Length: 426
Image (cartoon, rainbow, N blue to C red; front, side):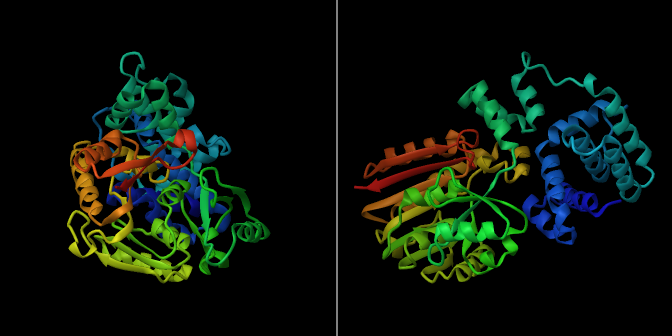
């Protein structure tokens, strides 16, 4: 049994049993894997996570007793084997079956014959598997084909129609490119690009932000360039948020939902590390990480503090030149980065989010000076958390007017899905 598949299994089992976040679980386990195997582990882990509903649909097809409940180990190993057979053409079928059965021998003792039988049955009869009828139930068909919770598919079908929704679902299953942001306090974009290329990385210009670079290559965060604060990893959509906010040197900026801090750092860099930023969040541990990253980047103008953004801080009233409300949201715009988001079963939770988002936006708007800027953003793409929020806010607060509104879709911009609305106080 090879270490790469063993590691992928441990990551997936941790996610399945303990609801671990995919990125954190992967980072925890992958350090023991040989450098030339890390890409395979990531592909296998994220490939399985991106296709859970489809893989479980296939497993269910081969169970003699449809009511039979598989334990987490059996299901995880079968998902891994079927993913390799269905999606990883570079791996010979015999190797995928053999290595999966070897995993089962270690982690599902006495069940390896069952695992072997399902994988071999799939190879013989895979053409007999049919998805739900699109004509009868389009949402069910798309839910299985692209592995999204049915309620998400139904919501997007209602909001965006059939063709756009399918493009959106497909884009969410693609592996995102790595985008980075040069720290202009320390290095120019051109110098960073040249330095990375000299280290063997493939580097291209970004698509949405003038500062962005897209990079291909392993162990980017282990480079001296990263450790010395020359760049940060950040999706271009988040860079666009700060580009639209347009912070200036010597201003006072309030970032009311700041963690994990990527936008806060870019704000400080745009301000040339001159001025004042208050960065707040409800989680102190996340703010500690933000503070640590500021040290890596050589940023000294950020003041952190724990605060519930739904609560008013009278000391900030009408003090800020610009206020960023990067609100907590459903995260449906970042499923290509965190595929476990696709399987949230509690659509009712969405009912509470817009109320909280509006409360945060309304409270934070009181921090904006007359003539100042209020920017509302989310990493989601459903209207209830985006356009509906800003329209309600503007009706209740006519002293604000929209200057710019952007909805980024992964299938159009090849970025995370983001909503950005820039408003000015009269």
